[in-house]
Image 1 (cartoon, rainbow, N blue to C red):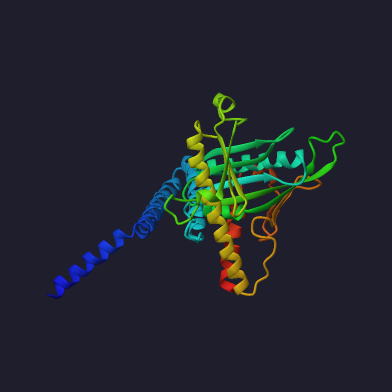
Image 2 (cartoon, helix red, strand yellow; image 1 turned 30 degrees about the horizontal axis):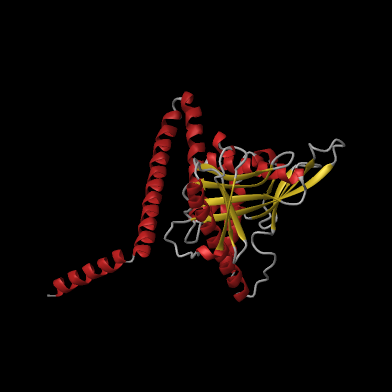
Length: 342
C-alpha cells in the first residue's frame, strides 16, 4: 500500500512538473548545463593525469619537455576558464548575449573607438570559440561606427559580458588630427541576455512603432535594393532596436522583437539590482549602463584601468586584441566580495 501511494505521488509530481512548461524548460536547461560542467571537469581531470604521466616520461627524455610545457599551459588556460564559470551567478548567466556599442562624445574619434571596441569583443568571442553575428550597424560619417548591435553566442556569454556594461574611455594621439594632438573618446556598451520567446516579457503591438527603411552598409547587395531593414521603438520605455542583417523584412521583424525582448529584460534586471542596492542602504548613481567603467590610455603612457575593481595592465595592445579575461574575472570577484560584505 505504502509503495503504491509513493508511486502515485511520484507520478503526480512528474505530471505537475511537465505540465508547467516554463519550469520544465528552465530545469532541463539547468540540467544540461550541469552535465556540461561535469564533463568539462572530468576532461580536465583526465588531461592532468595524462600530463603527470608525460612529466614522468619527460624526466627521462628531454625532447618531450616542449610538448609538456605546451600541454600544461593549455590546462592552465582551461582551468582558469572553468574557475571563472563557477563565479557566474544569475538566472540568465548561461545565455547568449546581445551586445550594443554606441559612440558617445568625441565625434569621429568616438565613432572610431566604437568600431575598435566591436573588433575587441569579436576577437574575445573568437578566442573562446563563441560565434558572433552583426545585426545592425550605423556607419560613422568619416570613420568607424555610430552604433552596432551584435549577438555573441556561446555558453555564459551574457554572464561574462555583463562586466562590460558602461562607458569605455580612450585616450590617444588622434589619427584624425593633423596636429597630432591627444584626444579623449567615449563609447557606451550595453549587454543583454538573449532569451527564449516564452519568457514572460510582454510586448504589446500598441506599444510599438515600426519603421521600415532601406539598409546600408555590410550585408550583401540586397540591402541596398529593398526596404527590408526594421527600426522598432518601444513607446513606454523609449528603447529603440534595429535589424538590417536578414534578407527579408519579416525576418528582420522577428530578430528585432528578440532584440527588444532582451533589452527589456536587461532593464528589469537592472531595476532589481538598483532596488536591492537601495534596500541595503547603498548609494546608487547614474544607472548601470551609463557609468564610466574603464579607461584605455595609449598616450602619454600605456595602461588600461578598471575603475570599479582597480585592476589594471600595461598590455594595452593585448587588451585591444580581445584579452579582457583578467578584467572580467576581477569584476566577478569584486561582485562576490560585495555580496559577502553585504
